Image (tube, rainbow, N blue to C red; front, side):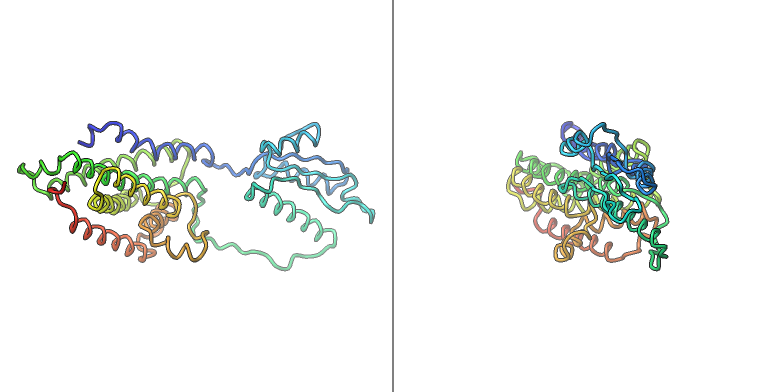
Length: 350
C-alpha cells in the first residue's frame, strides 16, 4: 500500500534530500569565508599596508576590487559585498594629528557578518596599539575543546536532516495514511479478514522502518560524498539511533491518527506538531541559543534529545550513554505515545 502511493513515497525522499543539497551548496566543505569585502587604502603607511595585506590574506574574507568607493558602497547596499573598509589618508603616520580610525561600512541587518567584520578590525587595531606602545599581552585564551574532531556547520545540519526526515516521514506518513485508511473504510474491512490487528501494525511499522533506512542512507551518501560532510562516529550506531527515533515518531503518528476524526484533521495536527519541532528541536541551530525559559521546554521535545544523541555519536564520537537523560526522555516519549495509541487505536474505528 505504501509503495503504490508513489507521490507520497517520492516526497518522503525528496523533501529532506532537497534541504541536504541546498545547505550543501551554502555550507559544505572547508568554506570559512563570510563574504566578499572591498578595501580602499588611501594611506601609504606601513600600518595601512599591513592591514590591507591582512584582509587579503585572511581566509574569512574574499577581497573584491572596485575602482570607486561609491561603487563598492552601492554593491554593499545591494548585498553583493559584506563590508567596505576605508583607510583614510595619513592613517598610521607618526604625526599627532593623523587619522586614528578605519571606517567600516556594513549592513546592520546582516548581524552575523557585521559582527565578524567589526571584531576582526577591532582585534587588528588593538594589537597594533599594543605594538606601538611596546606593551605585552597579559591575558589570553586557552582553548579546551570538548572534541578533537573538526566539524563545520554543514555537519551539524547533516545530522539535523536525519532527524527531520525521520520525523516528517513517520509522523505525517503514519498519521495521514492511517486516517485515510479509516476514512476509506479500509481498516473496518480488514476486520473481516484473517489479518490480526498486531500483524497490520507490524507490517506498517516495518515498511516505514525500511523507508527510514533508505532515507538515512541517501542523506548520508549525498552529504558525505557529495558535499564532503563528516561523520566521525559509528555508522552502525547512527542507524540504530535513527531507527529508535523512527519508532518514536511512528508511535506519535499512530497517536495522532487515533485522535483525528478525518484525514484533514490528522494532516493539520501532524503539521502543527512537526513544523514547530523542526525549528525548535535543533535541526538548523543549537537550541541552547534560545532564551533560557524556552530552552527549558524545548529540550524535552522528542526531536531534541534524538539529535543530541546523534550528534554526540556521529560528530563527537562519544558514547551512546554520554548523557543518559536524552535516552530517558526518548524512552519516556515512546512509552507515552504507545500507551495512548493502544488505548485509542482500533481497526474497527470508522
